[in-house]
Amino acid sequence: MSFADLGLSPELLRAVTEAGYTEPTPIQAQAIPVVLAGKDVMGGAQTGTGKTAGFTLPLLQRLQPYASTSTSPAKHPVRALIIAPTRELAVQVHESVKTYSKYVPLRSTCIYGGVDMKAQVAELKRGIEIVVATPGRLLDHVEQKTILLQNVEFLILDEADRMLDMGFIPDIRRILALLPAKRQSLLFSATFSDEIKKLADTMLRQPQLIEVARRNAVSENITHLVHPVSSHVKRDLLADILNAGADGLGQTLVFVNTKFGCARLARHLQKEGISADAIHGDKSQLERSAALEAFKSGAIRVLVATDVAARGLDVDDLPYVVNFEIPGTPEDYVHRIGRTGRAGKQGAAVSLVAPEENYKLVAIEKLIKLKITQQEVPGYGPETTVEELRRYRNGHGRPRAQVAEDGFDFNRPYDSASELKPGSKPRPPRASSKPASKPQIAADGFDFSAPYVAKSAAADKAEASKAAAQEQAGGKQKSRVAFLLGGARKG
Ligand code: AMP
Image 1 (cartoon, rainbow, N blue to C red):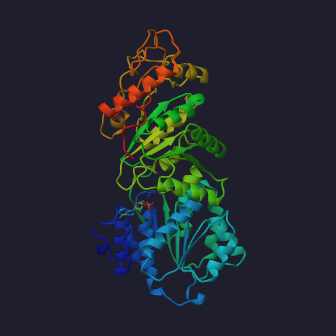
Image 2: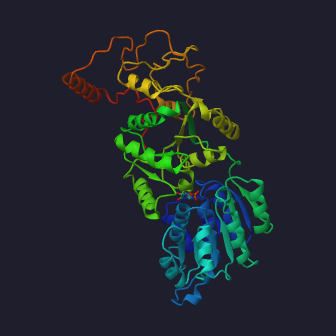
Image 3: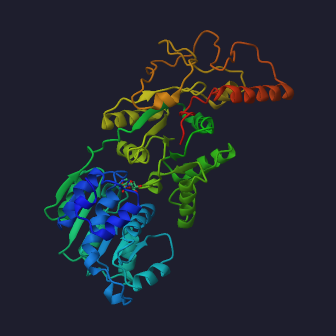
């Protein structure tokens, strides 16, 4: 099926072609004709499915008769309202609106909180047909009478489940009360709780249900992996993971549970020489936009984010998502990892799970109906202390469990790139983490049982140049931690 088969206008088809889309995604194929027919829609779709174009393209076509090059504000009343839960998502949706409306003289703008209202007021005064907004700031404009909603004919509520999580439903109900009853409404949500269904009942009229993925389903393009690790050494493990991939790992989005932890972790990674930044609700809009842009452009490799800040982030070809902490609800796991494995591409979701978070992992596995492979990283056990890690790193200590009682051999060279590849057989999860009783030789030849001999700087240098020569001669040599996270994977 092509976009032309869906009945889109030549102007929109031109913009779609220029965007590089050759055929509609399933949600687009289903939603576009229904919206064009003027029906209300209850859409079950996560980000990454192409839902934004799925509602924006037919919306633009429905508005096309109003398109006008007149400079009179009266000729450009607000006719369509798109409400998104976060600034980032609103900006992203607006970007899509601009892209697809390139050849249709319809005006659009984006209004969100955290920035001065003046520029938004000036923009609204000019006359705007399509307003993309976050709920709070939209109500601010309503209160100040800088926006009039009596001509709104189209309402789109994006990511309704997140609106609910963020406590925006009362705001949404207030906004609904301000809109003309005669309108076309679309509601999109990744999940459908009873509350979302109640909201849909008041907002939609005989909606057509369009669902492209199983509720709470995760993309099959994503490989999941859990590293059991004590919370004391998580940040060290993360730095190792990211450094291990320096020779080939692509960009990584790291999730944390709190704003405070977000900034702190980004600073720690920077200290470890990793180009990282943080994005969370306490940062100014300017800082958030700058961090996001730097991440999107590849100028920074790691973005540490809270759930709210990362909602709806659309970064092309993001290969890795790391859950530094396990989210409070299993649904958030689905949202988080939905940042990778998008638009048919492969992705990997890696979670660092401390023993006290195990119950959350159980809930996630139940929701996504998948037992996630567990892979303990040498040196980083679920009970490892900072002191033990230090000794391990200095060569004095040994990994907690080189060979577990169940025979799981931590020394076996590990190629996480193939382990993370969908379809490849991961080695069996280990059953025990009791320390091994015998001395061990590590994968890189390091003998943990040998007495520690301090190396001279000269010896260190000689070893470094030997390693560099080996690497040149024999391709990629993996370090002890390089097995982490698919070091050979190209981003
Ligand atoms: P969304 O689910 O709307 O956030 O879109 C996810 C990504 O898919 C965005 O980067 C879009 O640009 C891209 N996309 C949307 N529709 C198509 C399509 N028909 N073909 C290829 N990519 C698309």
